[in-house]
Amino acid sequence: MKNYRTKIISNQEISPGYYRMRILAPGFGKKARSGQFVMFRVQRSLPPLLRRPFGIFRTGFLPPDCDDMPPTEYVEILYKRVGRGTTIMAELHEGDRVELLGPLGNGFDLTSSGGEKILVGGGIGLVPLYMLASELVDNNSVRLLMGGRTRDDILAVTEFERLGVETYVSTDDGSLGEEGLVTQVLERKLQKYPDAEVFACGPMPMLKAVREKCLEYQAPLQVSLEEFMACGVGACLGCVVKGVGHTDETPSYLCTCTAGPVFKAEHLDWTGLGNNDSECGGCS
Amino acid sequence: MRPDQTTQSKRPSLAVEIAGIRLRNPVMPASGTFGYGEEYAPFLDLEDIGAIVTKGLSLKPKAGNPTPRIAETISGMLNAIGLQNVGIDAFKKHKIPFLRTLNTPVIANFFGNTLEEYGEVAERLEDIPEIVAAELNISCPNVKQGGIVFGTDPKAASEVVRLVRSKLSKPLIVKLTPNVTDITVVARAVEEAGADAICCINTLTGMSIDIRTRKPRLANRTGGLSGPAIRPIAVRMVHQVVQAVSLPVIGVGGIVRAMDALEFLIAGATAVQVGTANFVDPSAMITIINGIEEFCIEEGIDDINQLIGSLR
Ligand SMILES: Cc1cc2nc3c(=O)[nH]c(=O)nc-3n(C[C@H](O)[C@H](O)[C@H](O)COP(=O)(O)OP(=O)(O)OC[C@H]3O[C@@H](n4cnc5c(N)ncnc54)[C@H](O)[C@@H]3O)c2cc1C
Ligand SMILES: Cc1cc2nc3c(=O)[nH]c(=O)nc-3n(C[C@H](O)[C@H](O)[C@H](O)COP(=O)(O)O)c2cc1C
Ligand code: FES
Image (cartoon, rainbow over all chains, first blue to last red; front, side, top):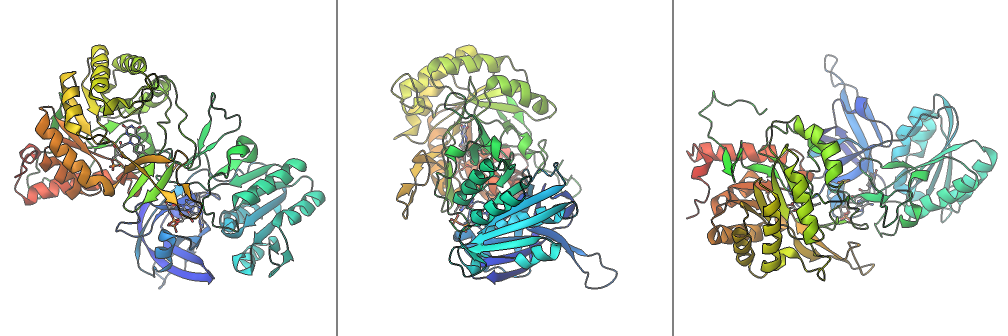
């Protein structure tokens, strides 16, 4: 991990209120694993004071402008405009100076390779799933279940399809794909593939519903969580979630930024999760 | 190490001394914003800063508060971490081995829930040779006496400092809370009780409400405000304390840039601590140290001590 003082390569609105930003980051891809994130400083001046956490959508190389130049390495984030920081980000252009700390955190655990993998994304929660899918497709059969409120919340599905991922879309209003919740689709898939492993990222109500289904079908589950963060490196202790077995007498707090953001579902105390009303970027 | 600039011009001396500890420069992290040092090792050379100050340590591990624990405000942040820490024994076992490898003085910040606990932590700190000084956080409620915050009552502050002093031969820095009517009263009380230096300020109690949910943004309802928003208050309080006592003072509160640190030094602080700014830029302290050095060169100052307390 490193602090990149760098600049924006491109920044585009891809769906109403959703943006894709490419940032110059030489050497970033070699270190980054799926599920990790960056702390993004939206501008040199203050406010906003704190950096914003964003999942890594993917890393890649742009072809060089001329033959004897090395290719340009970038990291790509997808973000939803929700507040002060992301509104400033939405106005940024190619060449604007930004800072990026990363790659940070603990990504997905891919040790049980081989077999059926079901990825569940809610709205902007699909971000960490793209790199995960690209790491999984070679040795696994990968399905993406993508949910959102309306068609506008369904992002980047064709990119998953290009990887060779089978995708299933559902929206609350039926404006794209099946009408209803993504967990309905999940239930059908779990019935069909009883040995599947599930990976999920999205708003807390969705994660809770996904967990219920996975408990019911005894499917292993990894989730990526969002918490308010100040440092992103385990120093401020602002981003903790309760670990399994947490009690007032035997407390267990885990830092989302270092022990997470990806957790195995069985390592978390789910009763305490999602009690804060953080505006989750998805379809909550 | 920072690049050697001797070829350009004679480098000013940035070294300062606080309660007998020599620091290579006057810049160190503020407790609770720099973990136990190792968290920031990937981003800056820990041998370039003046000292390392640990997260506040207690006798037993402390779980801290429910979440949300942090909320951003305009030019600041509120935190109610609740002093989560690994406890003094785990600190000694798991954190000291890394800190031992560094050629940088380590200052342990600590607190207690009762008078007795303060004393016990002090005793244990005395036995850790790698700790060169202790920073006593008195912004904590006394759970045995109706939760009155030690640092807001000159008598309670004096009592805890006296007790800790009796257990600790190492230099003792006392960190004051700004949540008082007159900070000089507490400053004088801790000076009399045997403090070797004063650090100020801790966070200012604040609150922020989400108008849509009509709930406080922090689970703890209130929290400590830090960051640039509190800097003018911190500068004022450091100035007052410097006038009131004859102890060296460490200034802290809202320092982000070198010019912020210089304000504190000119007001009379012998050293400064950088807190929230570490979150914004993990190498903020290095930028600040370099900026102080540049300022000295520009102003023709060859020893930082000439600048300290030079307020006109
Ligand atoms: C590990 C992680 C990965 C994330 N990945 C993405 C992503 O890929 N794409 C995306 O659009 N969003 C993502 N988020 C959420 C994103 O960080 C917030 O939407 C963003 O910080 C909002 O900033 P703002 O200034 O626009 O909102 P404001 O509400 O003005 O922000 C105020 C403060 O609250 C914090 N905050 C607000 N909402 C959230 C939230 N949901 N999670 C954490 N902090 C929050 C901000 O960081 C800031 O400190 C992620 C969050 C985490 C923790
Ligand atoms: C997240 C966080 C945790 C803190 N924890 C401690 C602590 O454990 N002990 C302590 O004495 N001060 C603690 N502080 C206060 C800081 O050390 C410092 O006094 C205060 O933040 C003001 O400085 P700043 O504006 O540069 O951040 C904490 C501050 C923050 C933001
Ligand atoms: S964000 Fe600071 S500890 Fe996780």
